[in-house]
Image (cartoon, rainbow, N blue to C red; front, top):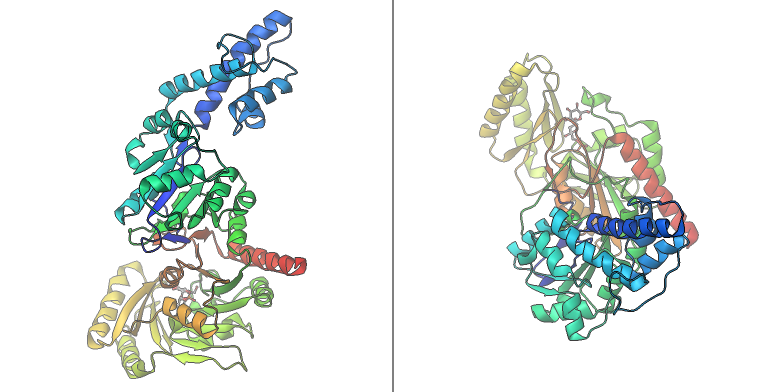
Length: 528
Ligand SMILES: O=P(O)(O)OC[C@H]1O[C@H](O[C@H]2O[C@H](CO)[C@@H](O)[C@H](O)[C@H]2O)[C@H](O)[C@@H](O)[C@@H]1O
């Protein structure tokens, strides 16, 4: 199940989520399209025979999206007929379906919709159903609203009738005598049915009039779901815009996306721009596998010049830090960018740019343990072809990328034995490495938190953005799940769970992303 948790709902903040139906829970576009086609084709064939003109059927690809999709029923009838140069009288709701008026054709279409719904069935968005199930797990209620008078049949057809704690549909609205969207009435009626205060409820909508209604109702959070390339428009009223509800996390419900399922940070850059509206990013970059491709030998992982320049450009526009598993001095030298903040040894060793005082070392007491373990590892692995021991100030990496596969167990057994002798250390993993580091509650996530605090970036107008590729980067992704944006650089050899919200394919895409971010910030600065 994919989740891209850059947005977390928690029971502390919310009691309920109110979902719009069509486009959020169900996909009925194909049913509507089939009904429109059948109705118009019957009418057009008849019209062509009567007027001696050629019969040109309704096209569900072009005519549907151009003239009828998303419009009120009668507007759809009018606009399509106008496109064919056909004029019909308006008629009235009392017209019989066999009459030839706008109202009568609309009624025919509605009858066919219900017929098609029976035959084809409504489909549901599984990621929305999954979100509702996760909400239920932590005691957050779910309600459904719809302007449609057919809502009950649609929900039944999609098999989601029993999913909700309350429903307010077109028939209920008529009975209650309440206004449609963009008035907030249907959402407020749903909140009342649930017994929750609007400020403690979330509205989820895919239509502009819907997010506007959510905002007008004073709801605690309005989420826009962008199904039709209208993120900008939704963002006028929505607090956040997502491309799918898989991007919404629920605090306390176990959820982790798989690295292969995440949306692309490049394809969804407009969503990232929206997150940054009126805010500033603080960018945290992992080194190996993120700024440089993974190579056979660690000493050869030099940052490409183009990447270096891009990072430099970005650092002129916002805070940028490199947070690496490497030794602080090593990563500083390899990256070769002077004015950055660096965190080495997985965040155990932090330093600001030269001249700016900022130093933090959280593992100094453990240096004797690390020194001893380093010696024991060297002895235990002596003579093993391809093995490489990399001592960092606050960690030791044992690389086995160049060790014959049959000898991999020997490497791990040796590391485990050294660990047994040095109980103040702990073992972690990474890409073809085992590492020993101080057994204290400190990692890239804690370092990130420390940096945000120290740099006074723990503010509502700052969005931390973290880019990384490896297991140790997950600590940082987890740390900023609620308050920032995690982006994983995919490893094409390994699919694994991740706390990130977006993905990039490789270091080339990382560079493009960072450049795009720099361009966006520069343009925004010029505009203001
Ligand atoms: O946090 P990072 O900056 O990504 O550092 C993680 C480890 O990166 C290095 O090892 C990895 O990259 C090497 C060069 O591409 C590769 O040969 C190795 O297999 C990878 O695990 C670095 O040498 C380690 O110290 C870091 O912990």
